[in-house]
Every structure is written in structure tokens, then in C-alpha cells.
Length: 453
Image (tube, rainbow, N blue to C red; front, side, top):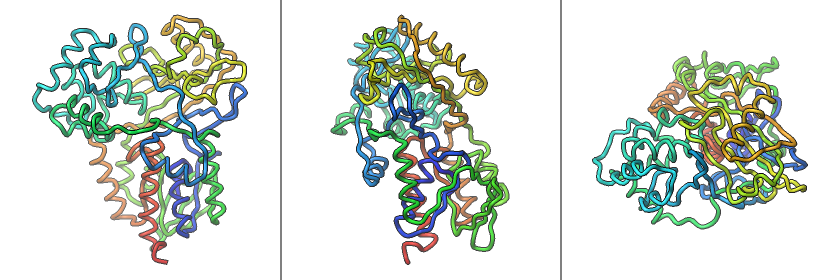
């Protein structure tokens, strides 16, 4: 496995379960990718990356159950959008797409004109979205629904500019787009899908314990997990592959799962498959920084029912999203009653110098100033931490899946047994990455004949 994030480790774990001997090579000095759990505010399990996964999608849920980890769910799911004040997100949305004009009309997030424009959606002829979320939603509902609902919700997940983002890579929206009217399709979906239970869950001991449990299981099965062992190149040697690592060592494998970010994968595959390498090199990634603050509780009591809020792009300075983390997770409430905020800056299409170059102090000062302006209260951090995720959010441009199909075909033709998986390819988030890992593991098991032994 090239890459020791959730995708590489899950693929290695599933292969080790069927008797394969596996090695995981990670370039960083720790494994886990964007999953990182650390101590903060006297708590042991505060997330510095994603804080949960979808509980209504089976892949991550099944993995966590297999590893024997106990889980917990958010205390509140109410979120808001900041546009000239905080507005609770209306009920009856599918990733921002309205299913009920009445509920949308009751919200003061949209102007009267914006609501009237949205109300005409069921009467419009089918539109050509050109695999762009922005083109679809703007054409169907107008700019306000897109800019104040769909783009903030989808953009916050992917750090994306949805005017330049592939609709096909957001399955919930792609499903709606197959119908003439998105509003009516959203209504049918919500009417026929009445899932029970919470939307999200996470291990009570932190997502980092998923990584620890995977490494433990791989090692127990005789596998090897190496950090500080980035792969420089992969070369074909008859029916096997030789992987040269940055620490001067060589690994020989019958098959390889490459889970590193696309541009890193591009470099190591340059000689093995020039066409695949060139395709991977063209993929874009956005950078994000997160400021984690411990703050006094009193100024934030009025917001105790909110899990956080999003800032639409036309309203943004630097802050894109704010999570009231101690409201959201009961086990993230410090003993002294103070609160934890997680505040994000950076996204696709903006200057990355704040994420890459600003000092931690400057980031903290900037986000505190903006949050105080948004909320109209004074926020006094008593403890801070800044985490930078440089080029960690893949940007799926319109036509992404067609380009990916061509890349994967080129790789199969020149290097059978080398498989791509991970966030750069078929979706971010734990469920998507775990699903890709399991498909890759199955493919490799079949290719190497492990399942026939």
C-alpha cells in the first residue's frame, strides 16, 4: 500500500484478513492521513481533521464495528448560515436543494425575490448542467439558493467552489439531477427515505483510535506499517513491482494499491504509466487551515442550540465555517465549562497564502475578529491550536469521472495489478475512502489469487 491514510490502512487490513502479506508505506512521520486526534483543553480526543462519518452509509460504520470500537453521536444537528446575521438552515433540504417551498418561504435567509425564483423551479424545462453543480442549481433555482444554501453546504464538505465542481461526485445531488424537477425529486427522496437514528457518529475515543486499531490488526496478521517511507518511484520487474522509498530502501510486491494524493501518485507512476501520470498531475487540491480555540462559555450561551454555521462565498473574508464543537459533542466539553470552537479558513479558488504562510497567531487573530463580527460577542481564547491541511482537499472538476476512467485504463494496460484508490479519485470522507479501499482490496485479492489459495 502506498499511503497510510484511512484508505491504505483499510485496504491493507481487508487483505490481511484473507491471508495476504501486506506492507503500508507512508511518507509522513505518522500514519492516518487527515485523521488526527490530539489533546486539547484538558481533553484527550479532540479531532484536528474530520470529526465524524455518516452513520447512514454502511462502509465506515461496518469497519468501526469490525474493529470493536464504541461510538457516540452528536448532541445537536442544528446548523446556520451567516448572511447579515445567523439564519438557521431550513428543514426539508437535500444538500441545500429545497423540497418544500413553504419551508423555504418561512426562512429569512433568502430575499422575497430569491424565494419567488426558487418557486418556479418545478415549471422549468429540463436544463443542461454540464456536470457542474453551480450550473445546475443556478439554472434551476437561481443564484440565492445556490449561494446561500447549496454552495455553503457542499462547499464546506469539499472546500470547493461548486461552480467548478463535478455534480457526478456528489451522489445525492446527481440522483436528483436525473429528474426534470430537482424540487420534486428532493420531495420524493425525503418522502421515501425516512432513515432512523442519527446522521453522524464517531468513536467515543476519537477517530485516531480507528487508525491505531487498523495498524494493530495489520501488525498482528504479520503485515508491516512504515512511516517516513514515502515512495519515490514504482518500477515493473517482470510480473512484480519494485518500490523505491525516500529512505533508500526497496520493497517488492506482486500488486500495489496507490492511495496517495494525485500529484504525489503522478510522480511515482511517471515511468510506469506516462499517460496515467499525466492525468493525475492535472488534478487540483485545495488547502485549508483550522483554528481550534478554547473560549469562555458565557458569550456563547445564546448559541448553545447550534452545532455551527457556514459563511457563503459572497459574504466571506477568510472564515468559511465555524463549528461549536462543544455543543455538537458532549465529550468535547472541558471540565471548567469552557467551549471549543473549530474555525476553518481556505478553499478552492482563493489565495492560499493565509493557510501556507501566515503565522498561527495571525490566523487566530483573524478568525477571532471575524467570528466576533458574525456573532456580535467578544470571544476570548484561553488556548489555541492551528492545524494546516495543505493540498488535502481534492477538487473534482466537471468531467472528473471520465478523466479518471481514462487514467485507470492507462494504468491497467501498462501496469496490471497497480490500483488507484483514495480521496483524489472517487470521493472524500471516511465512507467513500473505506468503500474504495474495500474495492481495491477485493481487486488485488483476485489479481494475486489470494482468494483461491
